[in-house]
Length: 144
Image (cartoon, rainbow, N blue to C red):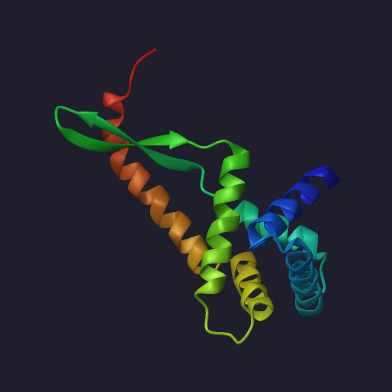
């Protein structure tokens, strides 16, 4: 369990790194973790892990061309890839927020995702809804 938390933290820090400034990304991550701990009075690593687990997608779309028409076929994602997508979604939605600095943006986004009210959570629900609609196209998937 500790290895998994460390892995999610490393992926989170790695996604924060811009232009090779890893130390700056680590400082931002630590400040976000302190703010989350202050707000919720819970272990911030557990909060981040459960936040990523709640917003990670299970399905994705693979394009398949059949008779000149491109269909979006639902495909199952591996856990590692879905974690990466969830972290990227969290960071993108945090950057789109209107708070003053990146630490407060990330803190608010993680807290909302933990409560299930974030735009990332809605994005995941929408993706799964579209996948359910497109499951009829699975007949075009290559049989093995």
